Image (cartoon, rainbow, N blue to C red; front, side, top):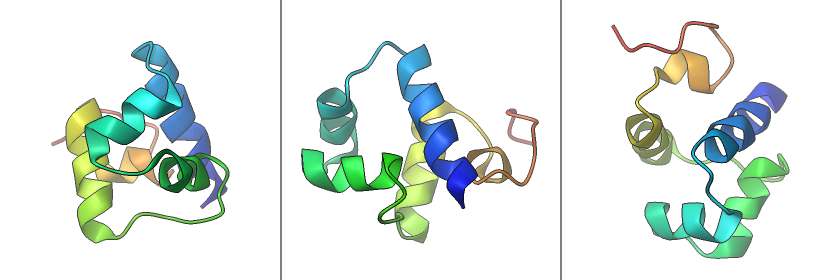
Length: 72
């Protein structure tokens, strides 16, 4: 799931958000969010949905199963 951390970082930067701001949006501690971007830890199912909803992308795109961002 290395692609997840890469996509997460890309999406965050596209929005012009800092890691701290992203952590706040998701209700996480900064260190918890950083673990996602550094592939040290991964969100649970509900966390993945929250991230996909925040960025308005499909779960398949978020986790690297598709290059299509749009939700269907």
